[in-house]
Image (cartoon, rainbow, N blue to C red):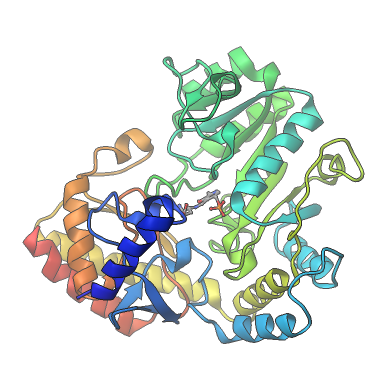
Length: 426
Ligand code: KE4
């Protein structure tokens, strides 16, 4: 039963649009009423009705060490005792900057902000300021936050400039954004042929994880890097979700990609509001107060968020985190694939490290068009069946799942047991 959540949600609906502060939380893709969290610890969350769930969302990525990780809590408490915000530099800003540089070789300079959206929005403005060009290129299925330039869907023809993907984005603005299918080398070559000299930047999720989860085909990233270098276009890797999760150097480390700029968020704030963008010093130094590209933020580099981010990276680097996450990812994948097979349900499980998506369709899934073949109604029934058995997956077929180092055999076995039951009812 979730009666407390239901009354809280009807209360929220009176004061907050859709009752939520971020749309995906409203359960619109799966139906039903969202639950409200009372507390979270390790791999589990407890709702206001006392129901406990094994959590595979991890607040959309930040909780890589599990919820309320002791090191992070202590660091935030200690920082809070010294004051919550100064609007003046504090020692933890250069400390976290140096730490990121030690983990991500492509980052020569970095600027902290307060969300992934701010990071990608600022990186795009910086790329436009550095190159003097207006056009940018993104890939369908990739989400980079809600800045106007990036809320754009493919235009009528694949090579035409974009159309707004949200009300309120001026068509005049959207037309500067070209949108291509991911993993399509021919479309990429044609786009650079036609628009290359006008492209300030290409921004991509190296591992697209906002349409479920799919991987770059062999050669695609190399072609992208070659074309961007050829045309003086900056390459921006959006590592807001993959950064520090797929390894110390994120997805770029796994795939051997050297972008000009990278965007970070989530893990780098240890669950507090942090975004960051960084990369080539000659590009970053165009930022105010050094250069002509303006970017700012009252709470950027906030001492609590910096302390949480440092503690999160400490936790990852001091343990065998990434190997543990790979082992757990493998374990969950094996269990879920076996459960789907024995239930005779078509599930394509796609995974990299501790990030995964189970598509309810035949695979493989290489792009948004493939992902759209998934049976969303079946996914919704699966989601609720699992929730009723104490397992919380992302409330949308087109989101990735996340495992934390706080997950263990007990959580994986309970999840697979529940899935074996639910899949048989689909
Ligand atoms: P935020 O502004 O939400 O901190 O970050 C935006 C963002 C940028 N880039 C990537 C690759 C992202 O995945 C995100 C945000 N991720 C979603 C989850 N798919 C956040 C969940 C939500 O919108 O509530």
